[in-house]
Image (cartoon, rainbow, N blue to C red):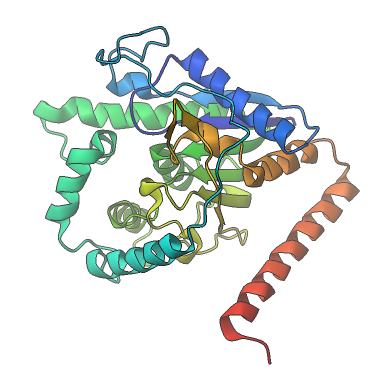
Length: 337
């Protein structure tokens, strides 16, 4: 059994698969080196699905920024003078808005209120998401339903390919929706050691309502949101407070533990992606080189070379860290006595 990393990208058109896959690897390697981890990146494969919805990929060599295939955000290494700002006030506002958003748009059974509003928002800003959640498979939009099956099918096939290996699945943006869907309802028999979500919209009301509806169809008696049963060890969720896609970034509040006791561990990070003076806190390259993700990546890589005894000690230490963090949160919540 070897360690393997599987990635799945998010919204929007992309450069060709080989280019994007190479850039993901460069970003992960950059993070490991910058944060002084000696680990060597294991086998990595990117699940690429942009070509399902876009006829041609973005062109790395296109110079005309008016051309629809112009690639504005290429992989670039992080600058050494990236400014770190205090966003405590914004975090409080985001926390309040996410609570109110769920209260207004979600019923207790996770069905949607004011669905016409969310439909308009999704249709205007998230074309790929609208395609993915198309349910009315009429002759006019049959290609949309086929597109959804194609996207899921690509991840399913790659998971099957590495089912005898120890898998880390790294999903970005809408890729986290596809990954959650596949791990919950299509490939739950293939264990994923570490599930990573970055810049994820899983906490948005419209997405939670879709997941809940699917879970109810699969298990009518279930009335709660649950971590995919395929995730056997860890689920790490990474969000930048400036990332507009992750308005509700606290997934541990929304998804209960699975049968392995695994639930989301939320990490607020600083996405330092910047190119030509423009910042993008949602860009995957910035997430892939954060210190927090690099630590998780290094631990996953190192786990392959451990003996059975070392693995037991490693898992025990991991459990101790989780308990320590839990007591720390309880202490802050209820105060000391």
